[in-house]
Image 1 (tube, rainbow, N blue to C red):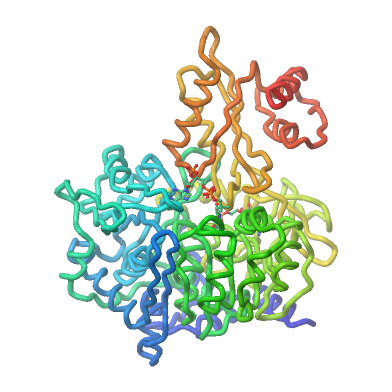
Image 2: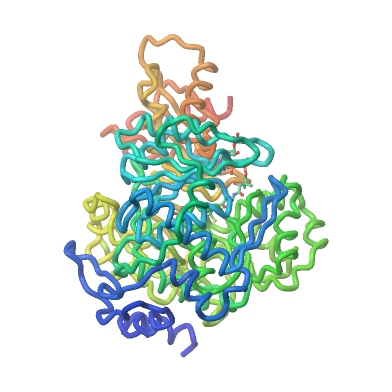
Length: 625
Ligand code: COA
Ligand code: AMP
């Protein structure tokens, strides 16, 4: 039996002893006696009586072990020209002061804090400061508009909101404070304090009684110690797109998460403790939570927080420059980032200019790694390139090439095999296993391993109905795919209304709600269509109300502006096409899949349930206009 098979079987057949062993790698305040138990909702929970603190594991523990002078975090910001390194001691001290500042504002264990920040080191410090207090952070990606922030504030009900005066997108300065003020105005819940980190690129007026200057308040605060929490206490809420306009608050617990993070650093990434790990993502996404902040620090590595893009800051050599400069061992980003690099540097000239000798592998996730991108990166870097599949809901890879256990041959288009701890099965709609190479629902047999969500924030029903009740005994991932005869997993895409735009997860249902709310619009369908660079791009097909007489171009511009204002530029909704009617089934269901197939130029069969086949010509007509 191979090393992978042994590890996989152990996790499958003796999950409690397997995860007890993994938990022993952490410095608990009180080790868990119970490894797995059901909670009041009947959901399996890991280490329920273990007592710990995630910020302690990420910082203080290393300082106590004599690693305090090691570099914990490197901030590299080509958009401001700043670079700064923090040792474990320095980072712990900064975080302890910020925790003291929050405690002084009344933040206690279990309270929520919303963090709406650009990629500056204070964003990571704010997260760790919450963890230190046992407070629950909810980071909102800086590319989201004020409406998205308002929805999250209303759902999480934070005592404090932490922000910065601005973000910087290449050379564009984006003031955050007006967005924050607007979001608070639109939300029924009002945070007591708004802490603002002033950046020199654009200072924000602190003109409200609740506004606090970050630097002044943190300087004046007493450092705060780590507050012991139960492993099952939440560490954070991270909202992610579902099929409706209301995002889901994925809840992450402290203990299971820390154990999974630690385990993954070795098993998935084969990361040495003294190494440098770089997740080129954003702290607003799950990859940023897990692999910019928590996992590398819990493992005792150096992590890099990069405020820039793969291209244009200043050129397509940006990633390779960072890898050389800091001796990065593992680079992790989304395929779209490499497609952007490839587009601007097809011959890989920039790659050749940098010393990548420390780089051992490049990991990708967030969307399917398309074979041409895989081949290009392998050819130009001569490094192993590893696709791994995961979701906000799990916090770490569900399937991967587990380089720390056994390196398996790569198959293009596959994220290799289930990570030990996950039991991945391909099922049909009534929960029966399908055969090799047959597509179906990609489902995870319960219990899910540590770190996976135990609930949706204050909406347990949504967890049950959205993931668990469809096929009893399983978590249904929302992705479709198949396993080949060797057990390699191929994720083929979402089976719901979620799309992936430049590695960002977005809901077409939410866009439809926004477009459909326009007074001239009778109905609409937003479809994710293939895009060479970003993977998918949303396109709206819009039917006007009878008798409405509008300038089509102007309406399209208004709809584009509405989505940009309400979700954010990151939605990349740039096309709204007016059609006479939408293809539907006789029962009135819009045939979204068929519209997508037409738009992508794929072969398609006219569905037998279609009400009016000529409606398909209408889609062809507007697409080819
Ligand atoms: N704050 C404010 N605005 C933001 C933002 C942020 N944090 N992030 C993106 N935006 C804006 C961009 O400026 C752009 O605005 P524009 O329409 O005015 O030009 C818009 O949102 C779309 O952004 P994006 O889709 O990211 O396009 P881009 O052209 O700026 O960059 C890539 C394209 C591929 C380089 C970039 O998307 C990328 O690096 N992706 C990697 C994704 C990633 O890290 N995913 C996480 C999972 S690993
Ligand atoms: P997010 O929750 O933002 O991480 O997005 C999760 C979704 O992104 C998954 O459900 C998949 O649809 C997609 N995804 C992430 N990683 C991969 C991958 N390696 N291959 C294919 N799809 C992926």
